[in-house]
View 1: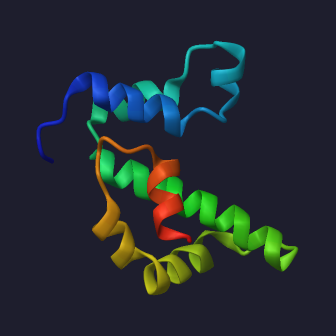
View 2: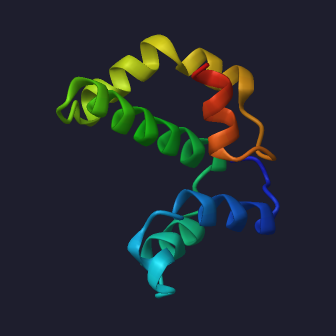
Length: 102
């Protein structure tokens, strides 16, 4: 993993976890602590969040949960290349996602 600014990494984690229950309640978040301790690559985190958003939107369109496997396959086939093109650690996952899904 490339050296990442710790403040930027924490900003990315906060954004990715913004819809978690610990974010809303102001509680301690074990997920954020684990990810920070492990040092997961921010690029992976942002792409996971993009796939999660994509899964949700595709499930809404299909009126049923498409599941993670189908979401990953569709993402890989249709959007992974554009993710690589548009990824920038200074952008939020929402900004990157918007560029990919036009």
